[in-house]
Image 1 (cartoon, rainbow, N blue to C red):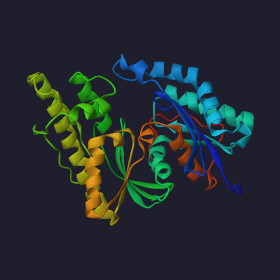
Image 2: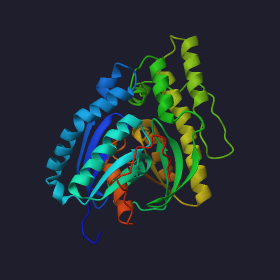
Image 3: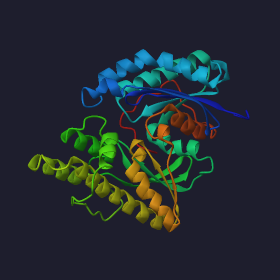
Image 4: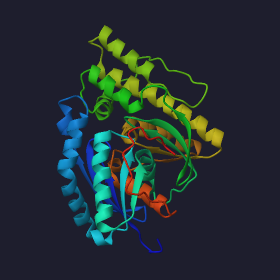
Amino acid sequence: MNKKNILVLGIETSCDETSVAVVKNGREVLSNIINSQIKIHEEFGGVVPEIASRNHVKNINFVVKEALKQANITFKDIDVISCTKGPGLVGALLVGVSYAKGLSLALNKPLLGVNHIEGHIAANYISHKELEPPFLCLIISGGHTHLVHIKDYNKFEILGKTRDDAIGEAYDKVARVIGLGYPGGPKIDKLAKEGTPNILLPKPHMDNLDFSFSGIKTAVINLHHKTPDMNKADLCISFEKCTTEILVENTIKALKNLNINTVALAGGVSANSYIRAEFEKLKEQGINVYYPEMILCTDNAAMIASAAYYRYITGETSDLTLNAIPNLKIN
């Protein structure tokens, strides 16, 4: 760990992307190869776990070779082998974990299992070289809606989380019911640009910093069933507006409670153009707003390698008993 530059090979297989990356010193991406299975799962209306696992097995060798080639390095140049250990689909996770353990053993390189959620947070370190803890992070994805106080690179406190559906899950369910298909988030975001937010939807009010999206989702679905000829674009933008207001309100409350003025967005839903535009408005209140570049919002291995770096430099490693933890929590 006294080496000036540390190269981390990251492997991400938590869902339906087979991704491998090489990242230098946690911030500089030398390669980030992402093999997506979206087209494969579209016809099923969502990710089929067994199909995802089989495609990871099929693709991972090729993706590793491409990552090394693009980074213009060989295995001997790698300092650490990292992988996502959870949360995610257990079969998919096991492909990446098993491959990383095999590489670590064969190459005699340190192994490090990484929390996928920490990876999403770390994506901001790649896009914003100046960003350092402490700050607030709003993690919004298909499986998570968390407000997290990033006290240090490896020290986190969850301030609020969803009590029911994650925001990305709600987007996917709404998109499926109104006939937009999978993946729902990008399709809703695209159609919403043609609509007017003229539909009033119920907005839950919490006493704390938790979230709830189930009621809004159900209201949209019921409206669609009762009035099938309702303008879908208006429904999409009204849904986006309502859910985004909740995100912004809780974020502002959390920032005031912590007495800090920096928030970073993370996770696949942070790519949503309406959400980004609304958070941009916070800059007018003197709040610093960050979010990863688009390619780093969705699942990718560069973010995993970055998160691994900040744990590795503290002396942390994993041994060969490392296993997949599908319901892994942050911290």
